[in-house]
Image (cartoon, rainbow, N blue to C red; front, side, top):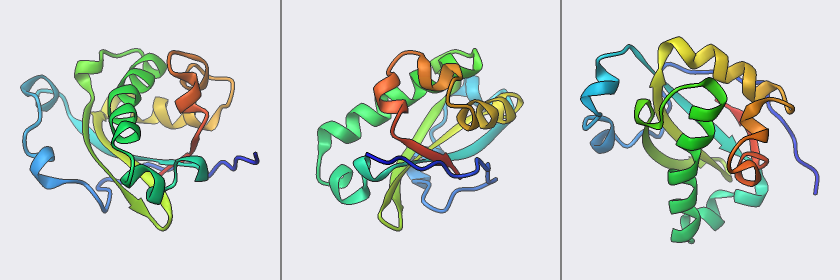
Length: 132
């Protein structure tokens, strides 16, 4: 299976953030400056599959904070998952992370040998196509 990688890029406000969830952020996270991120998955986790598979949704929402926290050296409590959504046919995981680790995450995603891809839940991380 061919996986492609997109040039990582962090946007200030992803287009599919679920505002109902974004407004109920932990006080611990709001005490730090946060950045909205979107991580896009390859075709193996396309939106048609993920949106129709509650187990996949649950896996992504529970495991991505662990993957991110391990990659940038923060607690999973510092990460607020906000939503899953489509970008074309792809699935995008949206979250808020502390601003001071946003660039580190961007660099980790750009490096296939980084802890992002080689830490816990490496199987899910292997399906990341890029960051938006």
